[in-house]
Length: 324
Image (cartoon, rainbow, N blue to C red; front, side, top):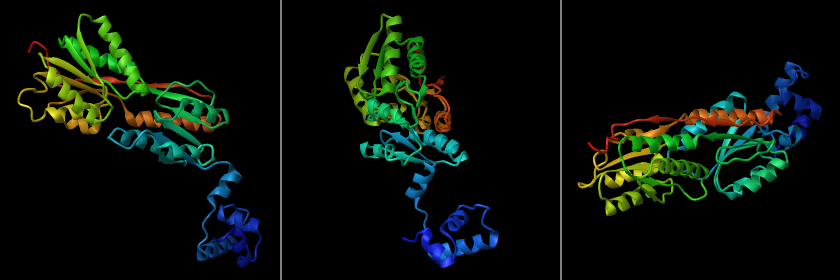
């Protein structure tokens, strides 16, 4: 591999002069700088990123750690992160899986945004204790090097549950999320409190997984035990899509007639369902942008700031009055 020492030898200048020229430093006059850059290009010189990182102690790269690449949830969120980071000269890489965790302690990242339920909180705290800058989107961690940017899950789940109750449904199914998911636990906790406040209700929980397969299984269980109109709250839109798909060809059970469904996230693909899906909406792009903004603040030496992303209810024709 060609080094700056090789370039200096051919150009007949010092190593420091080559370094200045390659980095655009005005200490080198334009003619010399142009000649050095031309020689570097001829020799196919590629900067040593690892050496540069050690010298500057900065990579200008941020990692976003997510649980998986399935579903359509992450697109706008990651774009919001990227847009904010790019404005400040940073690049974003997407990470998933335990092997990618080593990018933090090995100094390959200036900071990280965490939305990965499988990333252990104790591990994150160890990194924070070593000075790594983190923003968490899926848990509550108090540390000077960690900012929380959390979705208002409880408010959203309460809005969804109350919407079905106010529509007259006394039988309500809730399709839950995967075990260990912070968002799923927060939403389910709010639903249970809402149900307790509105007794008597026929309230049934069905274990879900935040994937369409969970909605398919829920639809089959509901059809097997159906005994009258019911409201269904899927704790995310992906499961609602699976439920819609399973009921699409049924002549006995119709969404908007036998069942009314509401989801959470208002993802792009769910907006094309017929009848229209009611959902809990928020700006995923803003969520990503705020997360990046808070991480940049930590990297710059600022104090940890916790923020909340607020939600609202998107009503739909698919939620009809139970007596209709």
